[in-house]
Image (tube, rainbow, N blue to C red; front, top):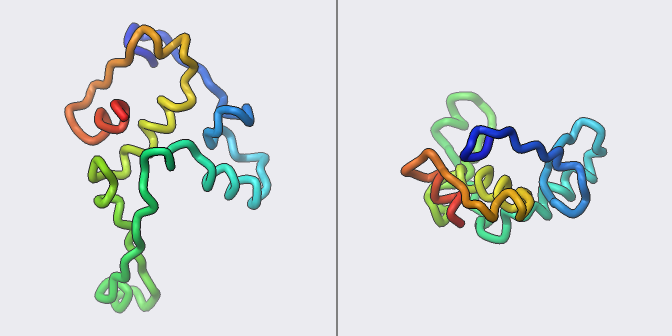
Length: 111
């Protein structure tokens, strides 16, 4: 929904938008390709995976934590906000965008 309450529809299926969109019919390799080439990597960093030895011991399995707190806005919320803005057509963006957030999500929209 945009700032005036109208629904914004974007299927994400075009090859040009580079959004993930509907993945139900994609092969594993095509899905992985879309993830790895998503426009969010224009601003997001490849965050590290960190061992969680105590948690791994409790569940008897190797647990890795993805450190999204190392992103420029210190949160994973950058990913969804930026990806949506990147795939929204200019004719919708030209009137501006309102983000009802004072935190990480709004920072992702601003990028």
